[in-house]
Image (cartoon, rainbow, N blue to C red; front, side, top):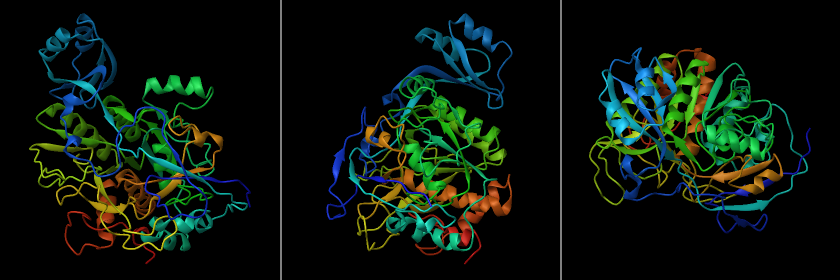
Length: 484
């Protein structure tokens, strides 16, 4: 038995009727990258409207980097920061406008794109309430987690049924969390994060980590998003339960303290996770792009995801929070956007996840219609594979908050803080956790079969066939684990 004091942060969607303790609003520090609520047509502004890192991504025609490419870049005043030979892609710094044009004209170069910063979609309001817990019991039953009574999401996917049958995951299965990092000190994540294989691909964040938390691993989560996502996949279930409690997590930092994700960092993270043999990758990030603005970026993403699939990794991706009809490229306002690309959801062989949540119930329930489509979720038969709990005004998804967080400094007080959030970012890790259970049964390097089994074992809450909001259905952990 482990005795701790638990402080809980309630998310944007917490209802005023919560009477456990008074709540207090907490404003994240720094620029707010967006909202988990339904977004307007401004969600699609074209790639040209996004900030860039100042670097450029170069794609070759034949997926091969020419022998003289480094010399040519140097002659133009640039430097190769990273090269992905198997993709025929390189990241180059130090290029002026004229040099970019000259590079585009080199033999073998297909396109040169700015290295765009893609923002995460996150809540802008967070409320805090303090809850004391004298007994947080550490054992093999995740239902003893302090916050399990409020975790409608785990019950709706029948994770508790899987746990009762002994299916809590295997440490031999690895899920890479491509996000803002992980708080490996959090009570729910201690011992679950493989720090030897965790890595950061956001150099600007590395300096912040060393400055604010000297000696910490570069994967330390200065935001909070990645920690919440990771603890939804796998958790010690002291504060809040995850889908599993023994699956190994690898932190792959591809987004910075402000919640912005350099395309080059995400690309590097996908390649790295595939090359270290991650069984599952979770990408709770992305955006809506116009292919016409820069088709080369789409090609780069597709090349990386194809590489991951061939390496045997199951790539799970959040569908996005703009409320878009991806079948008709239409916004909630009725505006039409031809040639729309949802990254990384539209990548080949990805598992694209939409979000569900109760229409009412709030913090303590009872929760009504937990499988209702979330109002913010993107949808479409052509895009969605499966649905999973993402949280709504009727009930949030609870999971760990990072004690390294500079966005929510209150979380630094103790490695036992919890946040309640909503979004497709929260839905995707439910699927990643279920995929980890399938990998345990089916074996490694079976990405295609795992994807198929996710479809087959999902609950057909929208009926048979392919539903625009649910895809093949809402995931079911017990069915995937073969225990019901």
